[in-house]
Image (cartoon, rainbow, N blue to C red):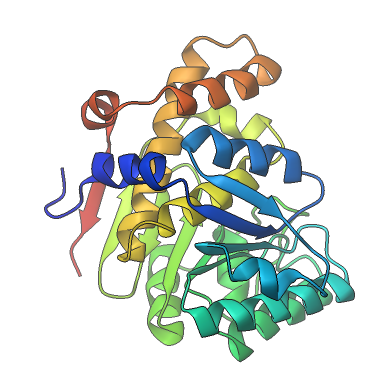
Length: 269
């Protein structure tokens, strides 16, 4: 275990506190995002109307944003919610889903990041590279080719924006610009189910709701989600049963299993 990073303790805090996680998220995966938060022990709220998002933020412990089903009006609601979250100093987690695929997605992602404070930016390699200013293309919501070192890009983006950056992939990268971790938990079956990236964003938001060190929160979230995926994959016949088993495994995850299966590496600066 990495010194000072007690993943089990953070995980148990979620179940004790049952934090409210406010989502403005992808309509394709909204049901799964709500369920994954509930499985961990959090309380999801999916409120999008501009007339109420600021009020909902007032009862939430974190704000999760995902531009997967992007519209101009939807982003305006996100801005209202983010402004309220910044005033309350609760963490904002953004998934710039599909950044690098269209100019609209790029512009709206940057509007959120540049004009407000986003605590955690989570995306695949090409989404993060695009947000960082690299010339890359995203294949829909799947990662495109990134020729430069994505670990260096993540570190630089984290330093520039003074936030935590999460790059999901075969191995996940988490960096706050000072500390950088590689999370090696997970299973290839995750790539066969639509929405696992959106679910990860919600899981990170839930951990961030109870842990002030957001780099630790993100690492812990990825570890617990990844371990659950590893266990689920062993008892599943395909993507359908895997998705169901993923929920069940995360719901029944315990400290002993986390401590036995955690697989992370801290990268020296």
